[in-house]
Length: 415
Image 1: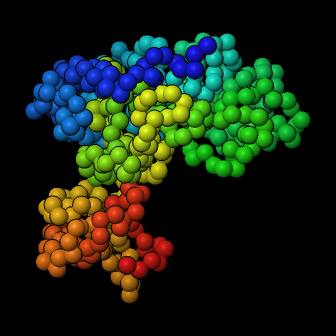
Image 2: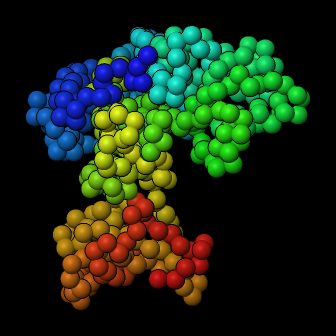
């Protein structure tokens, strides 16, 4: 039996790019023709001209954080979907609230690839403890298990005693759910003397996977794998047996951009994850900024898969903070940098000194120039409508953690 779900996972990088961007051109034309949102946002762009990542980077960003405002009563999908509401299989409500569609078709969320990489195979029984109520997580993972050929126990969340009983009685080989709930199940089973040793594999998602949880699963003989997915995009990336970062899913194009902008960062630099779906004709998300941060891992994966790898979840990109009663946004920092090409990278550090908020923009520049310092200082006030200082530092001085705004007031750190 193959270690890979299909041949897409071992394609050469050039072939993968050619396949993805060929599909993307068709998707852009489809989105312009059938999605009210993209008909407007892409009206000045020719789909045939988007042949590579540089062309993609010129398209506008759609931010997940804007969905609450875009979606309206009576139009819950905000005109983004290219299939009318009644033509969809399901419409979910996620916290916010925001609304997410599911279309017809096998493994619409593309989660089978992650389950297969974890070792789940045809004929396995999967205990699925993700929610089935309103949110899509339960059906998302169930669809992937069905695509492989597995039976699913639709356990949902809560009812710990019943979950333990079901595992002891049905003897599933795999668990899908949050890592914290699996740890609770194992602890309750130990209290009751219940045998849940049939569990060999876990696909965990929805929250950070903590060291004490990993240790508990290893002690129980369970090999646990991270799955990175979202209600709007489906599977984004997944952990392979190599245990070196997360493999990007084959059905999407991922970019890592500087927070507050749509500008891709160099490989290895931390930034915001932006995803484009070139094959989902129901919900053709184009340059969808997730709000999650990560970085590309360079080099091939030891598991033999050839797609891009990322380091995993590394925090949130929305670093908006309030200074002296006014919001300062990452996009404003990007605007300041755009006005001064000498600035290679910048970070606004906010501190508290003498009971007053203080903003200092740390700028990586090749030269330490007093005139540039003064010019950046003036631009800060023009853009942010607040007084702030500028400090020029050597290239490479700022940490590679994706922060554009560093609010240090709680920590009491001084610049």
